Length: 354
Ligand SMILES: Cc1ncc(COP(=O)(O)O)c(C=O)c1O
Image 1 (cartoon, rainbow, N blue to C red):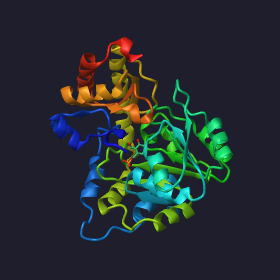
Image 2 (tube, rainbow, N blue to C red):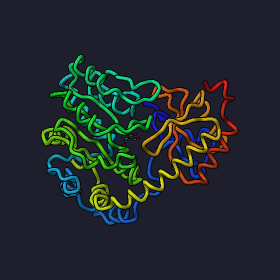
Image 3 (cartoon, rainbow, N blue to C red):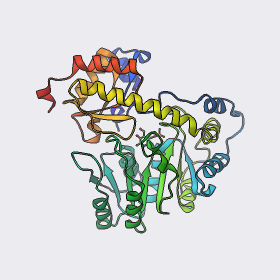
């Protein structure tokens, strides 16, 4: 995993390019730029730093369990969704192959490999990047897979799958687990599916990173069968989440209204971003969430020019197997204008883009 295989800024790269970090407008990390919610931030700040936090975050697990009407032993906290995905992979790999539905968040594959497992890819359709769930079920059965990794919505494509289709896939998987990465679900058209029941073999991974704009706090959770939650805890150290992280989680469970207000603003921002890209001859794919994927030609070189000359960061999608695409996240109007103007100067001519 290189620095550029995720969104967000790389301090060493900025130094090498001579770009001051505070000047950068970051379209590369897709998260709620209107967060964090003052109430959630205040709860984190008020946490007791002298005492150890609860080893498994029991009070936070109870708050999550109450919000989603599940048992508290069916909830496990993590140091962000990324840590949970790694911990889950360690628990799941021993039993067989893993299927990764691509293109996808790179940590799934890294986590399976680090756990000593074998990951097989099932690609989404080249034109829409929407996974063919029947093909995923067939691949899982052919491989005797123990786990299938799927994002909803997909990253970087942005398509959200209906809960009925996901439930059918989970049933088709039989005894295998479906690790469903819902990092962006609360900021998507299908946010109502956060409360939909899914079959018992679905492990739903979420965090406060995107919807609450709390990437720096590192706190996530999974809704999972209790034996899986117990095994995750058993194979990692105690206190994986800090007292501020646990306090923020408890407060966030009461703040759906904050996320709903931000979602509406971000969707407006996304629509403005889409119009700006369209005005440059880039037609982004339809997205159910707050980021857009655009075909630009050589994405890696474009990304470096945008950063070095304009202090504008975009996500080069080469690590997703899409070296001619960038992903850009919703941001306020003034930032979109800065991106539009930078792209107008730096985009390769249309012939070189196709
Ligand atoms: C699809 C997806 N899942 C999980 C994560 C990781 O989230 P967290 O910050 O909670 O570790 C990301 C971050 O980019 C992501 O894009």
